[in-house]
Image (cartoon, rainbow, N blue to C red; front, side):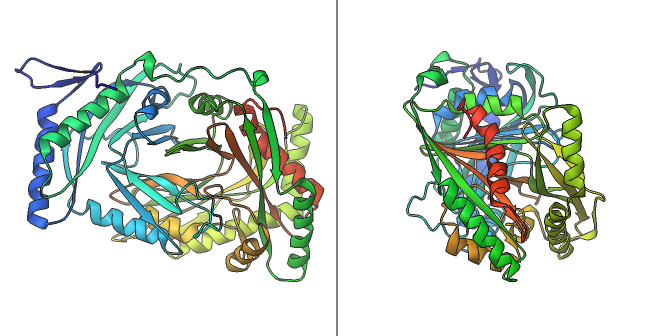
Length: 503
């Protein structure tokens, strides 16, 4: 695929990328400065150059641009409606084992220590400045399955990064808004800055050119696809597992465990990933939307839960635990919400999560506080108890977003409590390859700011195979039938986005 690039008159020395003019000389100067620093330090140097532009809706851009590379990232935040779109890779940051998040954090800190920037940084997009590390972490430290599809820990610096403040989800998909276009590259002492510059310009040209050829063919209507569904484990087996978990809880082995299951749906045609993401955004406007392309796999979702965000010194996390269905009428809906608030079982399950978050933030933050009483958050198919927990990093603290991710993940809402005992029981009994389900996805900047969400209400797509996941917090008096019904309700948003009838 050729880049859609033309050369502007020599007087302004700008290169046009589709309809977006790019300052080639500025980008080249930044790359040359990075090479000079790499020669001085004998270490790789990250160069990052940015301009402000009026660009289409990031989801529209991502839908076209993701085909230009095997690695992409799409994010729309539930907190500030800000979006991040990332295409291609300048540098991978990977980790394995129990200290995988710390390893990624250390590599990111080393890579940004001698950062070279150029262009015009946009300061009106909320938290986060400069180049970002985007990606996520699996639920488990070590994947127990031979079917490894996403790494245990993978953040990466994108080659092309677009950030925008998309405040109104009701805007049409082709709306134009202010955005920061950023190009990133890692240069060595012997890198050719001219070659790097041209490569970045060509990537930007491929990604921003609004060509029909970049669109996927329309997927056939759902009714024309052959579908095969498989529950892993079977419904009866999973209910039996719930029963065994409650026995261990009543015996005092642990206080809570979160059991998950997979619904694998195989279709005769590949799923249209951008169409699925678009339907998720439309149907779930108050959630955080995410999509990660990695080789042949797409991991995506619309999650109501975030793990942690850092803006300046302010830290915020969320306890989301306790679930009830939505009612068939407004009156019925309110009755179910009231039962959620008054249930001793659900309040206990929720309090376990909130207390753990308070304790974890207390090791790094000052002025830790939690909302009281919990709020009821209403989603399309279910409603949850929700509590915000906040704190402030001390002046001069070296802690940042990735330090807090390492402290908090996995919370009792994802694994159980006490953490070690619950996770050990899951390793021995759940038998499920969760992958990045119940993990975290998000972004971090070089200064320690960032946002990470919990990857529930998610699915992993591989061509015509979709693995959907849902889980429940199990306590001593949990009922297997009720817990199974709850997982069915949690699967419905993704099934709807995939245009698949209920489980």
